[in-house]
Image (cartoon, rainbow, N blue to C red; front, side, top):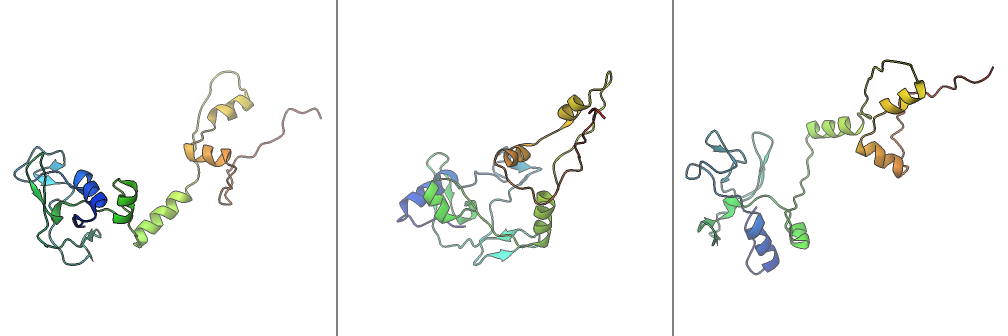
Length: 174
C-alpha cells in the first residue's frame, strides 16, 4: 500500500484524507490504537519491496521506500508509505471511500464460511406456565433472525435444509 502519485488527484485526496493511520507509537502513547505500549494495528509498517505472506498468515503488503511523503497540515507529520492503510485503489477512487477487497484462499477461512452459511437458523427453547395453547406457544417460540426474515420475504430457497418442525393437524373432528 503506497501513497498514490499526486497526478491522480481524486485518489490522492481520498488516501491522504481518510486512509492514513493516525500517529501512534512511543511518541504518542495515548493514541486510541495503543494497547500495552504497542499499536494494535501494527503501524508504522515496515517497508517491503513486494507483497508476501507473513508468519502470522497476514499479508505483508508492498510498501516501497520511494521517498514520497504527505505533509499533514493538522498534525505537521510527514506520512510515508508505512502509514497507508490497505485499500483497493480502483474502488477507493470510484466511490471516494475506504474500500478494501482481499482474496483469501486459506482453508481455515473456507471452513469458517462453510460453517457460517450452513449453520441453520437460531433456535430457542421456552417453558410457558399456565394453560397450554399449542398454537400460541409455537408462534411465540419461533425466532427469525434478519437473514431468515429477508429470505422469507424475498422467497429465497433455503439450501435444501428443512427445520425439524412438522406442523401436525390436531383437534379436528374424528
